[in-house]
Length: 251
Image (tube, rainbow, N blue to C red; front, side):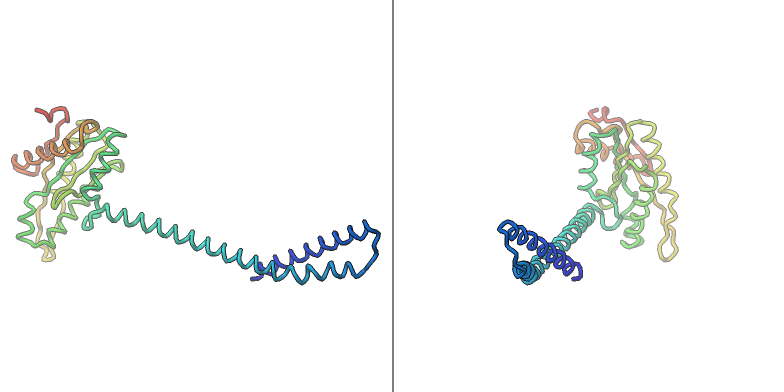
């Protein structure tokens, strides 16, 4: 309020000065010498300017506050929308990208950088659920998810694409690197010390199928190829890795 009153006083003072200057110029031009003219030139702006300027500045201040509030609301809406989009793209249990978000992300980044695809499946997961309950099954999946996330680099991506199935996009097309990372994931999962609330240790392992270099072709084809190799790993006794270059998928 003080700022509004200050502006009103300043505008009133300027109006009085201008009124006096104009009045003085007119009286001088017509060779008039009447003190009452200067009194009127002072009283008129002094009585007219304050209420008008006060109304204008109040409206201006209200508009400024309204625009500021609107800007804050818009910012909050943008932040809320971003959080909702992020939440919608995440698996609620593990916090990883969900299936749709993962493959959308991979389909975009694979055209910008070389990369390979791994499909990872928890071994004997139905048995874990049946013997130890779904609560412990969920805990096992979360432990595996965190283990995989720790085993990959900052440019790699991970998602949960099914019940006990995960997918990883590795930002490399070098066969030795892809195999090494896949083996690291497999080995790290076997080292997880997962125990039930009753302190019963539950051994964990994963089978991995992969496609090296997915920069060309469709992501759907690469996923099917990686999935076939995953089940080949399952047939080979589980807890193993089968990754091959994409160019061999047609064979």
